[in-house]
Length: 382
Image (tube, rainbow, N blue to C red; front, side):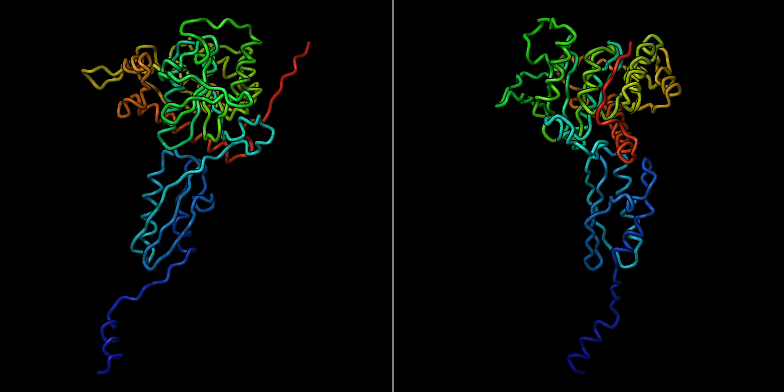
């Protein structure tokens, strides 16, 4: 037997490799549907950088937000679909994200905001419902997903975020009177509390307060951000109008407690955003329930169903119900954001659920043509 015949004899029984094409890969992955956008991940352009090497395939699935709650589900479904293709024995999937913006035209924005993809208003219409606590924990929850996040404390008369996050560093001023915000765990922060001394009151008339807020939006080096969260002050006055006129707000998150007395002012806040043509992303109900140490039963201390009533009344999503947790208020007093310091608690998981839901709603808005306005002005008639 010749050498050639000997070699051929050895490979006679070897399995033949099956050539796999990109078309086959895309066809297999096209059965995976994004539940929010109601399209398959291939037609949405999520599938990128397909590489086929023998019996192995590697690719990237690029989502609309790093906070996507179905990220791991997509990975599992994609791997299963790929391994069912004849000839594929190994599938390597990299999950990435590029946060979309509902307002791609940034030329009309103030230069300081041109790198900010989405601006989220966190509002309630009244104080005492946990709005600032919600804004802080949403910021940290989004940051934990890998998103670039900024947080603006717009409550000029009652700034609380510097204490809740324990920021000792003052904001600095760079060349051109540009304010450089300090950072905490990668989150850029600005608050009037960084510019005054301790418990000293900010005594400002409405136009002065509104001017200060405008400075925070137009003269701060925000840089490139996926999300800028604005903690709105209570009410529907000068500051709220300045925020909505100066910044292209992507959408508003409404914070309420379950009882009806809270809903009275919250309805006014929702009405304000609808007048300003700012989409309401949904409702977060704080103090929703309490779970005691001795049982797993939910105790409704402050009535029940307030958030759900708003959902039915205004047709907006209920993003999450946040339980009563003494560690949240304790952490706020000590400058320890709950999501960061107690990530495995039920309450932290609720805030993360809310953050994921907010990111989902923004992704849905960005896929439509009817997102929020890029600019807004009011004309009062006599």
